[in-house]
Length: 119
Image (cartoon, rainbow, N blue to C red; front, side, top):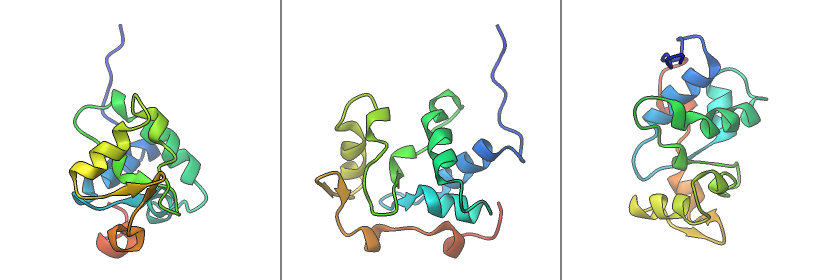
């Protein structure tokens, strides 16, 4: 059986995981914001694929804090049941109505504005 290795520094999925680990408690960001920060603005879908696979990585990756550009919980079906992502966000004070983050603009965290270029 092959052992899992941590992602290489230049591995896109690994860089997505590093950015996700920096999202502050009680805040959310978008797939596109992460892609833009990583210099690959057209790779929002790839960010989603990375987050779908994050359960195979060591340590906690707060994928529940990543939503689409309109604040919709488009990845909620990857959390075991349809309410887990919403509950995880609610536990942090981020409320959701009709699968959309309430006060999305206030809760939005932009990695390009908040952290130094390319971690």
